Image (cartoon, rainbow over the protein chains, first blue to last red):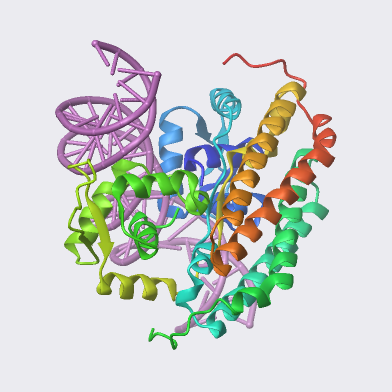
Length: 180
Length: 180
DNA sequence: CTCTACATGTAATAAGTTACATGATTGC
DNA sequence: GCAATCATGTAACTTATTACATGTAGAG
């Protein structure tokens, strides 16, 4: 949820990668919290970065995949990325359909509220597992710090949901389940 | 960071409002965490909602502002909103330039890292104050629940940053401050 | 009388998402 | 031989952001 170009540069700062690999790192790696950009965003972004001279194609040592295009960040790209990292960060923004729904939970039945909270707790636990796995791996102090922040936030959310879950059920609307 | 149309409907479910007032509620109200949509998004969204028959103009009891256009949600709009609230929520997404920067803090100096962490703690505290104010006000159990979740998350982040702040300073890069 | 807050709107731009289209390689 | 995974790309669509343009009302 930051500019896809910057996100790609961020991946490439840490090592050469193809578009496909960048996508994978958005899915599973420590940057997965920040982006879920698909191929439709990544490939155009890479083309543009290459045009701008911020990244370059690496001589492809054929590892069986002739179509694979591995990119490497250039000195200019590194400069550009460093500079963009130096601007004061914009305030955090959350896109949480979950919280938004809960905000209007008087339109939902108790059963539905309970269900979405249960699902969310599961999701949060999964993310905690992911972060713990990242934490255990070969990560820099900076990564560990950010991971740690993610961990305490997610754990706080889990514990809050578990403890206060019952409170909101009383706030459920009286309407029966809506079709669909 | 949900569809602006749905966000506007969400405001209007709770009472009539003009575009300007919707904007204000995005700025200061309990929905401020979810959106920072500007007039350029809100007015077109309202026009479209009106076209679709989901909202309607209220007879303007002139309160000194002849240009003011107050909207009210229609029955169809309420149905549409309720239905959209019934779909399972997408996973939460965070746009945190702050965490992204910290992730690459080996490109920053210790002074800069310290500064952005201090600023972030200030921002978080401000949000906590906002949420506490919302909590104290006339809010439904659902609102209180969501507010409470926001509170524990923000407090967890503050406490983590305060406690672990020193750890990341050691991870600062050796490069001198970059111009700009 | 001037500044701030109120109040609405459009046009140009930028950006991302979705769906489509293609093809190679590996494991079973 | 077939499915899953690897691998890249484009076009149409939707959406939001930014900048601009305009005007009123109240406070000092």
